[in-house]
Length: 116
Image (cartoon, rainbow, N blue to C red; front, side, top):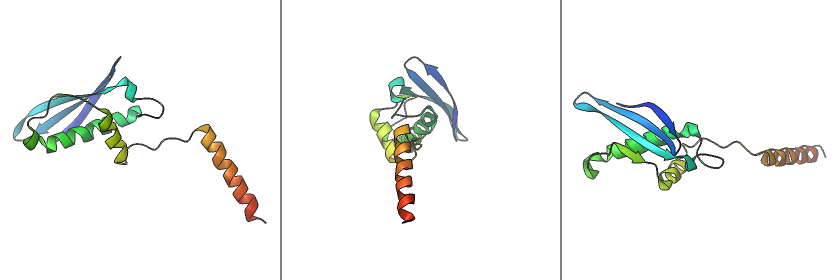
């Protein structure tokens, strides 16, 4: 069983820690780092970090027999982030104020044309 056990916020980013428990193998620990630059407007949300890292680690563990043992410390890459976004698991972004105003304007025009 793969378990997320928490994170540590560092100046360089966040380290997410996972524990792997199995009945027939010794427990193992993994730490995955996401650089601070990966978070922010138009980038990852902090809440997405554990899910992204969990998916990356699950994929690595699934391929472990073919690729050799999974390294206990890993770094999330830009391609990992792009794959996460493409998977549809990334949380939807809130619209900007400008986008909200445009949507209101379109709705207003649509409502006024409906009554003609």
